[in-house]
Length: 92
Image (tube, rainbow, N blue to C red; front, side):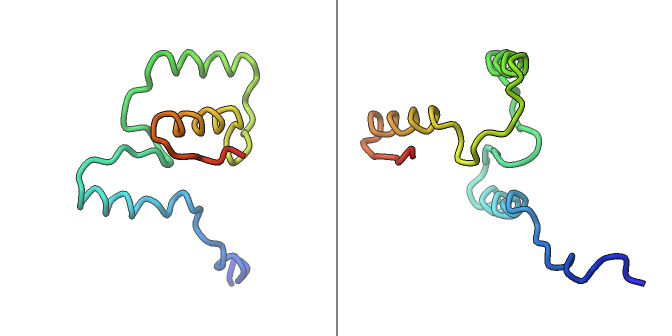
């Protein structure tokens, strides 16, 4: 007796997990990689970041943001790229 419907076999892996083999390949070819995908960070979290996380939790900012990220952060990144690298990032 099959416990799962056939359609379950068509569910693909989360895309975030698919980056793992690429990271391993790049590490083997080029050395160290700072991993910013899923999992535990491979560096200590700085105190000022931990303090801000605690502050945001106290404000009940516990929901996911827009998948594109915070608009204010996108605008700041766009401005910094224009100022520092002379290229334009669309923040919309």
